[in-house]
Length: 271
Image 1 (cartoon, rainbow, N blue to C red):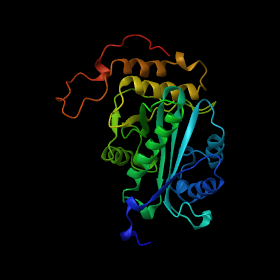
Image 2: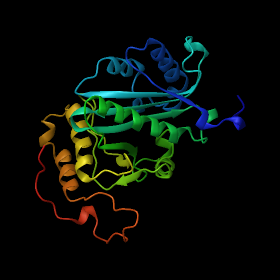
Image 3: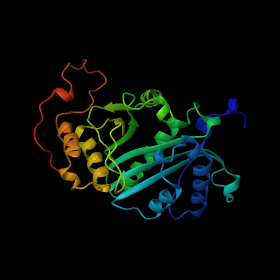
């Protein structure tokens, strides 16, 4: 296929299910051929073994959406499929919150509309997981390296360019002091990320929905020396969200100079 003839609209997508061994085989190919190259720093990516294990046996109420893009994805022989990209999202069941965690596109298919397609597909996958439980997805957020804290040479992509790309795709930055919990025992908390959000069913999340995501990721990764509900970083974010009404509608007047950080705190938030 010639690059100039490629049209992202013609791409097929496939959500990988734990009981679909053919799809699992495609996922392994996409991980080795596309994902590793997109996230060359081992500390930036989940291992294939962990991805597969958690897909088959979710823990802490966290389910995964693994989305593949390509051609001939339904061919009985996985080796005959063309793979363009692989994306991963997490669904925090207890809080109906989603995290768009990874998006990797093969170099020859980048900047052709696939990234936006994969965002849409993952949000639809998260909505489907919520519907299976009789619930509704409340938010779809991203953790993104903060351009003010992470230099371009220390990331697989210039953080400023990544933020600008997500903004073009419709994401908005959430004005909350976010700290990622330690993702494993003995690891440090992450202090270099910001949160962004995409609309779900045409609506950006309110503070309550974002608080659900933070509660979800902290409860699923309760690896600190104290209960996450007593952690100052967790409480700081939850408290700040109490004062944030959400994004203004598109036709709202310009925001006043009073920012979230300037508003008075109202005491510890309920867990």
